[in-house]
Image (cartoon, rainbow, N blue to C red):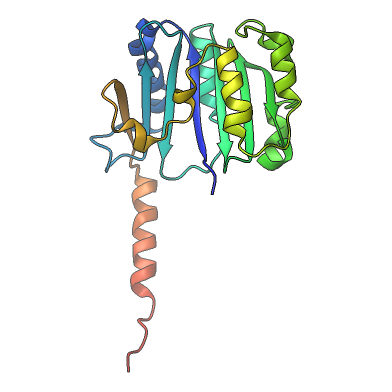
Length: 222
């Protein structure tokens, strides 16, 4: 079985990590969340890594109720707030990859080896063909990037597509394949915990669900 993961990478000075963390907090606060106390009680967890001497700040999102898909809102927000480039990395089962390039809040390019895999919303991810000219701002070699975009059917997309792309844009490949269990072991990670704010409607829904299950007839025993 292959690997599945998703992460975001912001091309910014590592000194901006605290400021970016605050931006992410405000994003969650305005979308009905409050600060969580710990991992166990949180609905959404954001992990952030910034390394000295590296021009990319990496973010990893783990939440209980989201499906596997692009974090378009965070990509757009951060790239807009800091007028910077941001790259979204999405890999499923080592078979499918989606790369999104954002600048100043807008998607400027995308690549996937199979855009239809990502469901009916794939049109929102752009043409997914990869335009190396639009990556020249962060890529070291346009011709090599063109060769990568031609790859569609590969054994492991992270090895044959993601790693060479990461090398060309100066992104540490290891940071592209981290998952939350890996991050828990690292000391240089900043974690943000968020809980969904419990409104009257939220509490009512929980009450109705509880009453429904309590009202169901218990199975007879023999």
